[in-house]
Figure: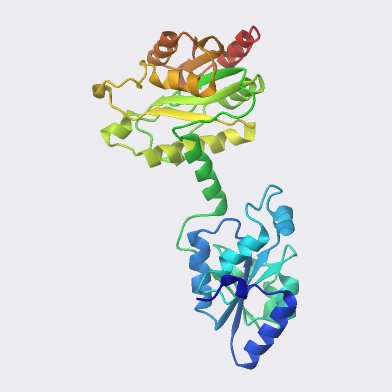
Length: 338
């Protein structure tokens, strides 16, 4: 089996490779991208691209170009690693580096027969399309059969990590811990919520959490989710809902550190379903924050009963999250004595 590293070519090597392939009558397809995290959409569109040509050349954006046109915190993997991953695909014949933000200079250098991109936009919208058509090439866009993206994958990883069962705390302990009910406190209460598009952040929540976080509080959700036990929703759907909530809080710079949830029905009489206290005790243990520096904020009697049972401060918000900001500021004021 051929080592994928053998497909990695410098620009000078591509000059020779393209000349030989064209001399043998091969039709060359060209595509490019950052491939920050390889996902099924990438694999599918490159497979379909290879079916339109005899040889497929892929230019992978350099680390510097990804940082310029995407995000200064990306890429996740270095350029050589990303090139190697693309080269490992059977559909790809050669891989090179793309130092510029756009591929125009490479297209004009090698004049591939096809310029092929994956996505859901029009071929005419590609900035280099006109130049390709002027030298006689063909431009094509290949839609993906998979509804995924690098950003969605990263968001999914963050959401799943927040639900992990173990927490190893590194660094400085938080000044305080805010335990937050979810439905009716942070987001509009929808019975057995399982659709991310129905997530609606309640008024004042973003700013209130922002002020709690700025005051040194770690933020954790403690939520009863008996819809899982009843079969109305799944854990995966719950995570997707929480992921949408995290996204709604992002403009405020708010980060939820953990999500504790009880999937049991009321009939199961578990120790975690509020007003019982297992979730709250676990949270205080994980963060190393005592009850006197913990606040439970919720919209129901069960929330306050659970908080009172573990000895922490309790604050009830009004219907539909009303006065959340006031509740947050009350907790911050109380924390001044910590």
